[in-house]
Image (cartoon, rainbow, N blue to C red):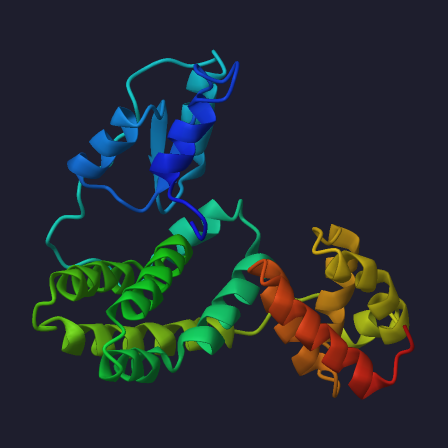
Length: 277
């Protein structure tokens, strides 16, 4: 976390009056036994390993709400085996079956990480190992959640090499796996949508100015945008009109809770369309 780690945060929360026994659950990408023991030793009641499986989340929360029982959740370290390239069915399950959301997240993933190798090489050339690890770590977490399992696994190996200052033996595999993953995701995204009302017809019912004005207080306040407004923005993004690319970028930033980037794109959208505040 940007200010303090989860271990310190747990200890400081438990020092607050009346919070000594407050159950705290770690949500962590660390799956090694020593990482799990550090969480428990710090006073955490449990942990959930990423990528988050809905049934694991329900079980752990139920345990500490008094509706379930059993030992802390465990995930074994990732085995050294050939992981499947994509498991989009698992990714869809984590999104509660929302295919439209999955498509947007996959598109955002492709657009955000298509140049990640060049960015990684630039950081390594600058000997900025911390930033390089952060970059690959973020890629690993998103890939795992979306179902890009092979890419997440090779990212894990690359992170270990970066942390150890060892030769990057897995770099070639990382580059090849990333390339194949992005190609397959692009083919998946390009599949024809399910039959339904044409996007241009749907967008006609949602004027751009109305949508922009309705979105503004939520974006300026960095608040969660209501589903009905997201649906209108999605129609604009899919309409194939001049402003659609900006609407798609705005959706991607909102999905990622990237408030500053969302505000920047939102202002561009207002400027290009001449929408008054």
